[in-house]
Length: 203
Ligand code: ITT
Image (cartoon, rainbow, N blue to C red; front, top):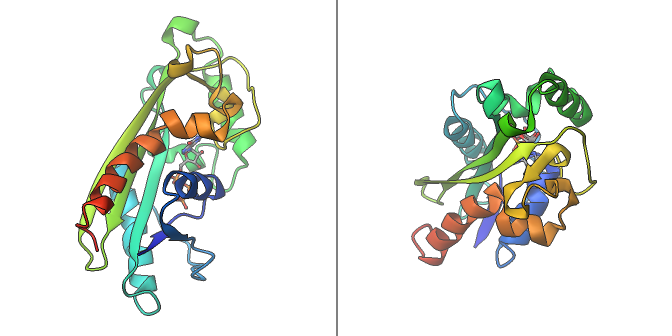
């Protein structure tokens, strides 16, 4: 079974491949998909489905039997009313570097005391079977926004996210990939995907 990961984000691809290590996974590069998908949905799930459908349509000619998996994810900060949320990738403007996104959140959180810095990562996935049937799953990871960036692993907002499951002592970027993949929002969303695929429902 071939699974196409409908994401252009190298960090997501790496984690999806590590967590779904039993599957043959192709990236958008592998299938020469170069279109820019407009993510104009109002929720993580809508955006995941938009991405999955675009890649599903594109891939039918060469990979008619492949299933397609899209991941829409982001950071929700309580003190910011849930922002950056679905705008996590473009919170500091389109094509702004990740460091600018991190600095923007740190700046907005500057005056917020430790007790009010709760946040969570959310990951919503849409899986399309070869027949185009959709299956959805989601996962969360709870934490707190730190006062400075720490750590070099992972991607995105990982350096400013203190992980609850590590007693807020480590940022997500200070975890090894094995540690992150054990507790992450992406891992939790992929557990349900794995179960679905193991049941043979999508092939
Ligand atoms: P695709 O749409 O091509 O999948 P993207 O990076 O644009 O890639 P999203 O629209 O889902 O993906 O934006 C998600 C953003 O949320 C991402 O760019 C990161 O900044 C952040 N994010 C998602 N998962 C994360 C994680 O595990 N660790 C840190 N930041 C994460």
